[in-house]
Image: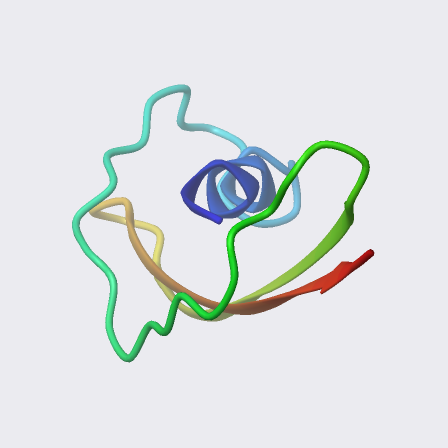
Length: 67
């Protein structure tokens, strides 16, 4: 999810001018089941808050797994 959030920030309309982002942490996360080979993992991320001047963003997301 952190990698998908980084991809969101590299979009030109969002954070585009920055090349490097740091992962700071996660809140309210639950790991329900491990993903195994053959599973389809769908991840959705959305930008919640952006402070473009200093390069800080907050993303929200969810994932689902289909076996």
